[in-house]
Amino acid sequence: MRGGGGRRRTARRAAVTVVASATGILPLLHGAAELEPGSFGGWRVHRLPAWARAQHDSPLFRAAELAPMAVRLRLTTPARRVRVRLVTSGIAGATGVPSTPVRSSSGSGEHEHAVPLGVAVSAEAPADIRGGVATIEIEHDGSDTPVELHLPHGVGVELVSVSADGPLTAAPDHRPLWVHYGSSISHGAYLASDADAWPIRAARALDWQLHSLAFAGNAQLDGFVARHLRTLPADLVTLKVGINLVNADSMRERAVRPALHSFLDTVREAMPTTPVLMITAVSCPIHEETPGPVVPRAGGFGAAERRVEDDAGALTLRRTREIVEDVVAGRRRTDPALDVIDRRRLLGEDDVATLYDRLHPDRAGSRLMADRAVPLLRAARQRLAVPSPTVDGTGRDGAGAAGDGGDGDGDDGGDGASR
Figure (cartoon, rainbow, N blue to C red):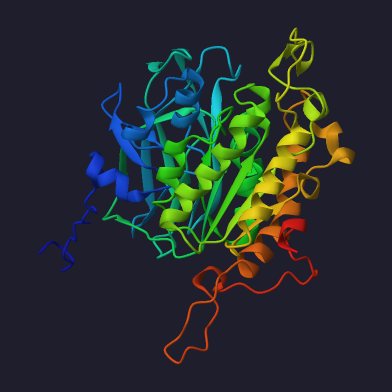
């Protein structure tokens, strides 16, 4: 007791929780496959497991896989502040900017943070990082609203620790899960913000969670991607295929049809009734009628000048679309949960002015694709859901259609293969 009869109360500081182990961080992540030790005592984020990464030797694929498109930390905490320590790494000379934007959301609202960009020495060694650890502070109101941090989509990320002024726990996400496979146009690593990448913008409008298997330059129908994809509890799978097969000149017509069948067979072995929607390549004049590969040109990209007199079987974008549509039409005889969307419904001939380098849609083009995709994806998920039998045998809507209404615009989301 002190003079005046009052008793001094000592404020008790909340215990700080620090999560720095792989077993502690991985459950907080959505959209990641695994973590591996990094260069700064943290954990590099991977979108493919080690067994899959061991089945290719492409430096470009390594860099794209390390860029955690649509990967996010998601947790709940009564704390008022969450801190995330991380290191980012880009390819030397590739970005030309000193920082990368990172989005967060919490009970206190949505925020964007500028994180200093580390630099990888080369594409051949994307894990060799120069730079330092940055700290992101996320304000929170202490409510049950999940705290989310969207990891940078175009650079590698090493997570060092996640901490809060109080306990923190992993927050499940019960929204429909959309798994998307695609190229750089879907990866969007060239866009300043992941919020403008068309799959992320579309998922946000649909209130779905997105698991991205979009790898810049590498939508090559690799079997190891299909084997990983089929392990995910997807409510909808979309496969956007065509442009990388042409601009890498990686397949001839003889190879692409069986490769596509094999990819779909692999997925269907574990996902026999999950709605799967193929999306053909968007318009790109440099490759509509001209085979790849793509090469740098003044102001962007162009098709290489080929010196093969008779190049039978070389793929053009037009031909990839015909093959994809033909494969889907044939398979739909026994697979009613499969369909295809023609690229013109996302980005057609009238929209090619948005291809800022003659290959990739700019911010406006990517946002346009997202806005057009929303009603098509919503309708396709509902329409392709395979009814499951009930106890009385009457049937009901499949899980893929749960919680979705119609579009309100009468759009069925499909193309000729469904009719």
